[in-house]
Image (cartoon, rainbow, N blue to C red; front, side, top):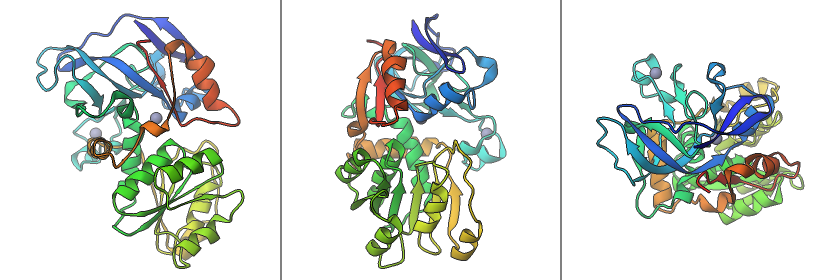
Length: 344
Ligand SMILES: [Zn+2]
Ligand SMILES: [Zn+2]
């Protein structure tokens, strides 16, 4: 089968490799779509960072949906032909965090495309217990954004949103816009802050009450005006620039909450007194649990979260670097998600 393997920094190769065989308890999945994420680009340009060294060359890609193509011994919860998504984070189930249901903090987690062969291939295998069948009416295209939707769902859960809260999302990219929609589905008033017109347009289309261009408008003043002069209850930083955690704290009302859901490439620095004096709670959000995967799938299934407007382009395996990575790294990035279709 065709697969994209990570051989090292800036060295991804489209190769012919043996088709994976489902071990007992696993299923083989024919990959229908796999998205290209900013993390894939970071691994390519600066990696290996999160990708496990000793597994290189490793098939990459972690935003995958597919159709069951074969079953390993003892699998009964899915059948050949089922369209599925997966909980792409396998946790040990026995550590201190797993026992408390905080699988996203498991120190020995295994993630698709980082600790196991990934989704940028024609086939992959996964433990059947962590495979979830898609409802009939959810298209495979919509399901291809299941992983970023789960990340966003976890971030919103970390934000502890109550009905009527005001939530501003900093960075209206894929995870930002999914977080915004999920917060809205939970009953929040939502605002988006970004510098790109394309992102702001999409934010308005997907339900932002106001989309603020931070290049032309002071976002602190704009958000205070929209929230009786106090600022939003919650700010979610999905932008991940060195300056955005500091801005997020300044945007939030005193006593509010900031959720950091980005991976910061450049190390931010800020004055911790801004936290002391505002009593803003700052929390991180990493990955997701199965509860987030199922919660996000419910919201996609009920139409409360739209993923397909965020699919900018569909490409073949041969175009991953020349088209996919090129568009994702362009200075004037004009994409949300690019889906790779490994069967074409
Ligand atoms: Zn991703
Ligand atoms: Zn664990």
